[in-house]
Amino acid sequence: MDVIQAARGTRDILPEEVTYWQQVEAVARDLLQRAAYREIRTPIFEQTPLFERGIGEATDIVGKEMYTFLDRGDRSITLRPEGTAGAVRAYVEHHLHAQGGVQRLWYLGSMFRYERPQAGRQRQFHQLGVEVLGSADPRADAEVVAIAAQFLQALGIQGWTLMLNTVGTSADRQHYREALVRYFSPYAADLDPDSQERLHRNPLRILDSKDPKTQTIAQSAPQIFDYLSDASRQHFEQVQALLTQLEIPFQLNPCLVRGLDYYTHTAFEFQLADLGAQSTVCGGGRYDRLVTELGGPETPAVGWAIGLERLILSLQNLGACAVATPDCYVVSRGQDAEAQALKLAHELRQQGWSVELDLSGSAFGKQLKRAARSNTPLCLILGDTEAQAQTLQLKWLKSGEQATLSQLELLQTADELKAKIFVCKKAKTV
Ligand code: ATP
Ligand code: MG
View (cartoon, rainbow, N blue to C red):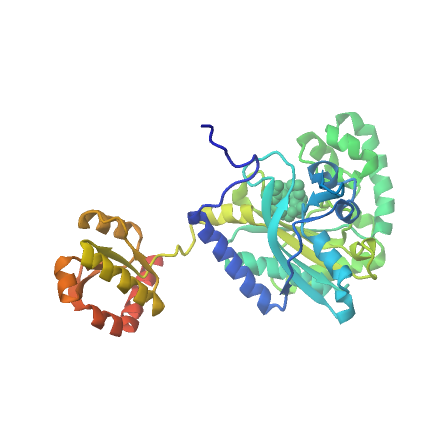
């Protein structure tokens, strides 16, 4: 029979890789909680107009990447391509603004975009994101950037580059847009097809074209800095000063514009050198216009989203992950020994141990090989002799040191042994 495979652009995350995901999730939860962010979980699908209004029709996402379909009630539904629109919809729908002050939210979940699958680019992928709603203060911009940097640092990822730009306000952009159209029009025939199409619809996006020829032309294009109002310029200067004070290095990149229409002021990206073509792991910025666009009160906001697949590719390159190894591996053979081993494993787990029980019934040698492969420091061995005497062999795999112990004694000294196991595991990871 034909084997059915996972749909194009989706992939299974197998147990060995899940360890990385769990590490990333645990670090994120801990860090975000310490910074007073609260988790929000919104639906995986939304009414299509949410994204059309919230992301903008002239963007790649809305224009060609959305999974949109009519449901059985003829409603247009879209699988969420990103998390901000849903979080802001929920913020408005549930009047979170009425709680006053600043709302700090985070989310983690699957996103869906119809793209050409390649390394670090899938049709179903995962994002971790934060949104700070209700503050126009440049300190909010600096805070979210700093948290992204701390997150990468906590995971042991070094060698990132932070690219920073401002896109001003929509009023600043109005003039800038005109200047760009004037500049690019004479080169229209030399631009890549996407950029030609953007020339009048969304000329800012030409700046982040990946086409080499377009990039060369864009290098001499007018820069947004020259079109900023005093207030916009001041905001951007303050953000830079705060990042410098936090000792977070950044590079100004006037071509960084982000794909989404609702961005205002600060725009930023974190890039990782080891990711090749898909090097941007985190993208974010300020989006002061989105909340009103979605029917809420005037609410300045800033946030980012991190692509977890790309982050995990980079973690795998580092090889750094505390793989969950069991505290002990239990080997047994013979009817009575096997039953006693099951009970022993059960009781040790009750005492907080992680225990892997070999169920194969194969020869001791084979079971011991599997024990070594599990990376555990300690093996418990029960055969007929041990079963009769209610004892077991305690074998430390690294030193080969072995001793006979009564099963009762093992359970009574479990805490002391656990301390020794901890030391052995630690020695292995350094
Ligand atoms: P790109 O230019 O790579 O398409 P983007 O500007 O579309 O990125 P954002 O919408 O800002 O990306 O999303 C934030 C992050 O989510 C990206 O930096 C990336 O790490 C991740 N991401 C976006 N699209 C995908 C995808 N199709 N597969 C995997 N990760 C993705
Ligand atoms: Mg994209």
